[in-house]
Image (cartoon, rainbow over all chains, first blue to last red; front, side):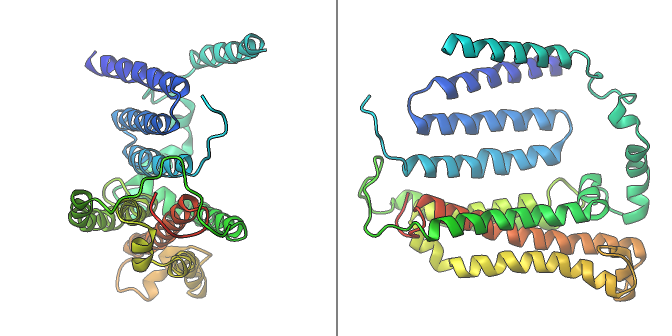
Amino acid sequence: MGLELFNTFILLLLVAAALVALKVRDLITASVVFGIYSFLMCLLWAEMGAVDVAFTEAAVGAGISTVVLVATVFNLKRKSSD
Amino acid sequence: MKAASMVPVFLVGFLLVFAATDFPEWGNPQSPASDSPVSSHFIGKTGVDTEVPNMVTAVLADYRGFDTMFETVVVFIAGMAVLAILKNSVKKGSVRRDHEVDAEPDLIVTNMVRLIVPVIQIFAFYVLAHGHVSPGGGFQGGVIMGASFILIALSWDLETALARFSLNRCMGVAAAGILIYAGIGIFSMFLGGEFLDYAELERVLPVSREMARYHAMLGVEIGVGCTVTAIMFALYANLSSEGKLEGGL
């Protein structure tokens, strides 16, 4: 029961994070929200006993991917004026 | 148009959810993945064959060693491709970016990084070397190691990080990692086994056949760790500066 509640909570947060990442205007914020999404996935993997996958998700998904995304956003030039 | 594109999205989404209801229950021992003879072979024999407690590492580095070797080669080729593309597109003169600010490296941030980087690097070595016993291994350890250099580049600038780990050295270390991996494989061929047949290494190591596989796995994990460390940092250094290799983020 406790685990199911935890899973449901994490899955709802995942959906929320995905929607926020799509809706938010600022690209840096979107990258950080993707990092949050990865960390939630990492929690889910760890909860299911796949600790190796969780480790990789935390290191690659939440760590390096976020940094590379932010680095890319910093190098973009703004074309539209909104 | 936007409304029309929603139709396939919801249709495919509905199909996926509908298909997911047919999945076996989580942790069900009768599910096809757990029920196959391959799984029970690995679960029963890994500890006997290799003396490695972490089954995931044993499957990754030993039973499927060929697969993992070329995964490492894929990481290497990805780094080479980014280098090849960005090296030729370097434009002279710096373009001011939208988010850029002129500031000295922050005192608090740089001093915190000074304290935390050694801890990160020791943890990376621990993850790499302890990958047989606990979760971890070459890929994770390499990424954590690469992240420590990226942290230096983020809090000072790229020049500071590249003074410690230059791009030439990066590519050397990356190639050396693959050579370590393939070298262990070819060495076991010379000893009379097949490619990546680690058990044959018992002829040169003063250990049993099982422990030879254990130690050879550590060897290939070190190779993977070298490649991943170097490529992660080289990727960041090139992507963050459009190949110019200068300035902070």
